[in-house]
Image (cartoon, rainbow, N blue to C red; front, side):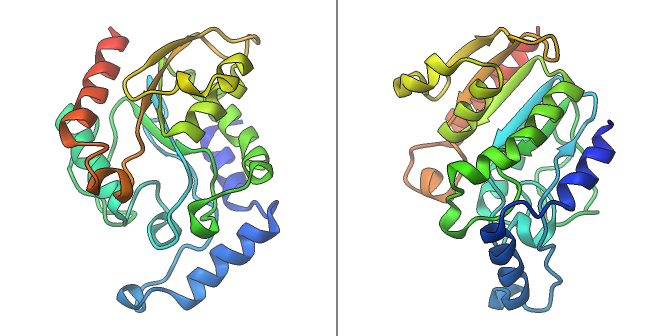
Length: 228
């Protein structure tokens, strides 16, 4: 299995009827601002450097963001906050991400998500996330990251499930912006890594000041320091 083959499998997935129906409905009806564009309307694969030491895990595609563009964190407010930060930190060659083929490349970083299809109200169900988890497991196995950045509590909990740290999930207070945990896998499929937590760069978090530019920049500085 390679990342390319895995991404082809992800794109072809139809495991969750509710999500399939929603992502395709959004792609047909479109938002007025994008009515002349062809929506992706399929599961969104991972994106970035296949030899990355940093793996970033988000929640799920936005209905008119990644579900439209077909690339992680591309075409919505979350990406508009994320990519400038990655560019400032030296992980991205440019500060903007508008569409596949816009010239964006990532260095030493791979972006993925807990869920691969746009969910209604941005809320995938636990069963839908369970269906997607094997994709994330295989990405971790193939990439063998040294640092995993979880954008939000759901991504945090999914990574801990994979590394068999269920006790951390029970104690929900463990998730905190900037917190870091050593991941010691219970299977030789995964290498030891550090899990770094960040608030998700959603519009809700950034517009209210829960996540500021300075706070986000510190996450990527910390990720680079952990690599050393």
